[in-house]
Length: 205
Image (cartoon, rainbow, N blue to C red):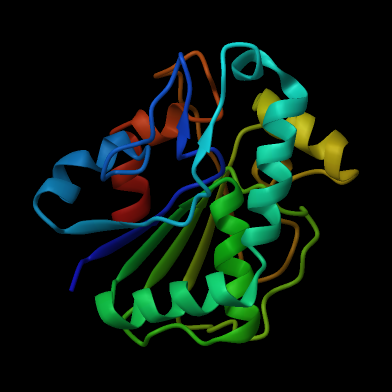
């Protein structure tokens, strides 16, 4: 069993001239020491992609990756796999980032959480800001949405999906705590929180 389950967002398994697939922490670099101690573990669900030099800097190429992984985040096979993963690990905490937040919520539409879960932290979630609570919402579990209005990746996603993302403006539904999270650990502000040691305190306190 692991205390924490991490759920990465999109494009975690891309091989290109500029990037390699994320290692065991799946991009949650702040959690790397806990992953090494097996106190945290990642649920790996990304679709492997190899991009050439031109596609590595091509917006249409990344949109194709996003479209495919967004579909996968809603497929029953993916949701069943995540449910089984949670049942095996029995975590106290789930920390999801970006599109991984949608995967978690899609799972909770179909399946209940293990009784061990105390809190789910959605880090700059890439899902509709006005999405309702999932069918299997558990009032004993704390739902925490960390948002950042300066996240230009989610600003683009809002335009693409034609609706503001919860990680950009907060999740506007009841029984959810929204918290502004300031992080400047990396110039790519969408992934900066995953490198920020303050994220551990927010998620695990």
